[in-house]
Image 1: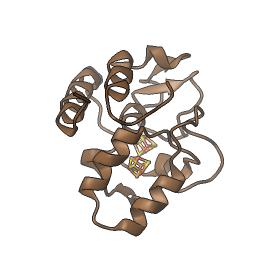
Image 2 (image 1 turned 135 degrees about the vertical axis):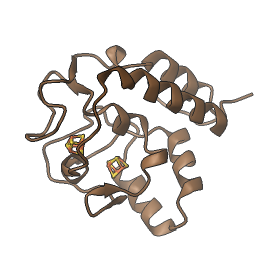
Image 3 (image 1 turned 180 degrees about the vertical axis):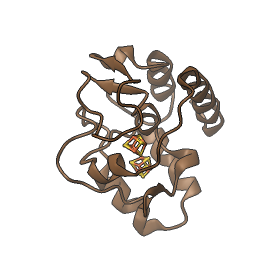
Length: 150
Ligand code: SF4
Ligand code: SF4
């Protein structure tokens, strides 16, 4: 049987636990969601979010905005996530993996925005395999009924 929404809920719970030792909350300034040009979101995550979101128009915009084949996640080209309302994420409980790890982890030590509370406290990674629970993430996505690239 393929991975289910329940499996993804459990995975996010484990991920949030894994990120806990930093004991630092996001400053919720919203800058990263404003500046993101493309966000990698897996098909199972899209399904998960779509159950939460009632507004089909926003969901469609988000699908266009996200791209499960894009490797560069947080760009410096000005973008804007359709689910950002004011400074906040309107789908915070169901936000995807890469939104959860941004801040506590940063790519090559360069992709945190100036003023982000995680500056100076973040773990630098050079390969996605170094991200928390990354193998589990890929296994979950491979076991879902959706096809993905890794
Ligand atoms: S889904 Fe939420 S946390 Fe992720 S980029 Fe959009 S507004 Fe930000
Ligand atoms: S830039 Fe940093 S502090 Fe601001 S919302 Fe993003 S993760 Fe949180």
